[in-house]
Length: 237
Image (cartoon, rainbow, N blue to C red; front, side, top):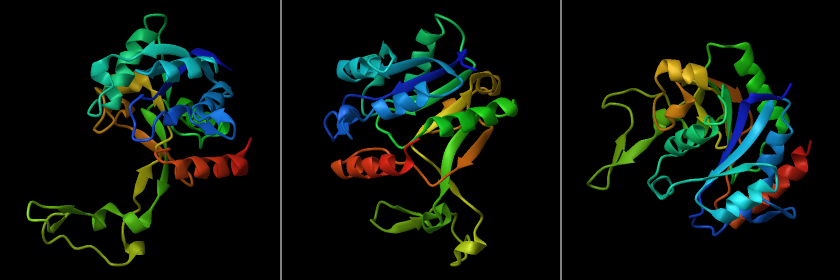
């Protein structure tokens, strides 16, 4: 049942290396139309909003029933943190009425469905101790234990402390998951009681359950538009 305390918030900035990427045509519709439709099709989400510094994004999303929230300039720079934009938008939304469940959408991600959103919300509602349920995927060939940083001399330093032993066999390593850049289902009551979570997205809280899938992707290039179109053809609900 749709609930006014369950809210979708789509975020997207105007500035990008791919001009107007959030509204580029994908199968004849603006890219942001697809996350918007997925949220509107949820059996739980009762209200929908968009936070952006770009009037074109706000006006396009409004056509899909998302109320606009103009983001201040200090939250729209290349160094601005997405969680800060989320909290700003929540202040605006909750000036009308409280929010318990928040589904955070990214305007440049079309590779989600209503069923995925409802799965995550159902898990969140059935497990009130969780702060969030986040789509995630395995990517063993890029396991963080195998990663390195480039130091000041241009050489590689391992992420693990010096002397740390890492097996060359992937099956010997603990399973690592990576968040999809797709959507986040959040129980704000738990997040607030926990005092927010760790970086880089403290708005997720600290008690996070992964929703394992095949991985979604966000659009940064024209090639990503083509990949999104292929995904949509394959996963049409």
